[in-house]
Length: 184
Image 1 (cartoon, rainbow, N blue to C red):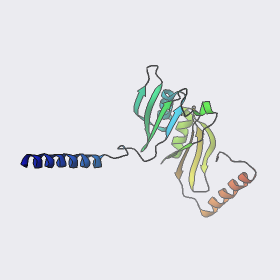
Image 2: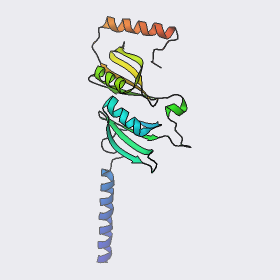
Image 3: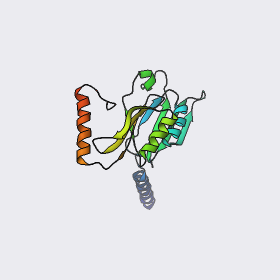
């Protein structure tokens, strides 16, 4: 009887230890956020090199296939992670170049947005909306990378209420004419 009680006690302790260990495991890996963009790219390895030059990205991981295409990779820009892979035939996601468009815009806040803008343009990004002070109080612009993804960059700027209102009216005037100036 004492042996049975001792075994039952050990099982109970082991179960409690497993529950405690499971409670310490986070659903979100360390260094990640709840939502993480995952890009499908035609030429993911080249994109990583571009993102390093354009946005100061750091490569975190790379999992190549035998043919060199990337099954999975991860970069870090500032405090944010971005996952990516090459496009694979039959996959449920397409690269912007295959799809003919992108449905997402990646946004980067920067302390020195002018420097980041110039760095991205010098690396090969094409401006789609010029970098300028916008009516919502940010210096903001949009770029398309060589792989079809759209990036916006900005920093908060001090603007007077009258400057904001003048910018807002100009933007609304463009919208009324059916012009979107890259805000799509």
